[in-house]
Image 1 (cartoon, rainbow, N blue to C red):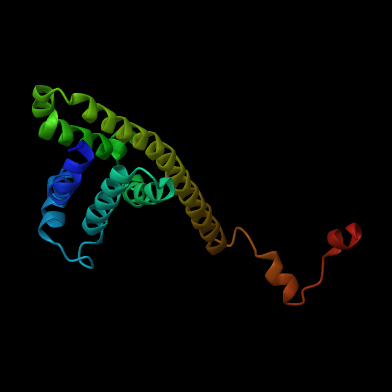
Image 2: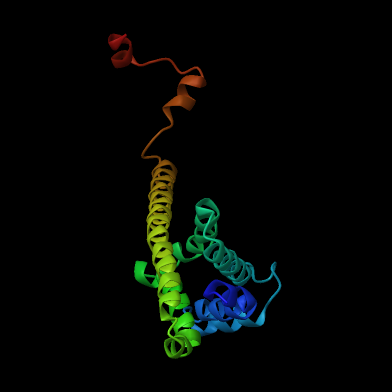
Length: 186
């Protein structure tokens, strides 16, 4: 039996263990809540982590649909990109899968002389990590852009409230004529 077939047979158990390891990368208080609550509406982040882990595992086994894999990665990375993780912490969930597989299969496969199959599968996980880095970078770029826009909006609103700026478009729309300096330009 091939290694992928073995993984497929134990898929649910391995996905649950991987999702649990991912949850373990969060602060202890957060872990308690997300592990205890399984309702998708009361625990959307925990549910998304489990769902993304399931989808990624399926895509790793099939290794046919790069877009589906990127979509599953994006789902999980978006969660981690907005949190106070360093890039390495945010993407560590991928390497947790390698750790899980080595913990589960390394000794047995080494004794059986089939360690090459594990290493070939780990190469897929390594490729997944490269995809994840690109997706993470794009998501962080979006987060930074949103933060800059929010700061600009807040600053503009503060200046407007302090009457340090005036909305010129509202004045012209209200029928206020141009002053002498503006009429000379025309």
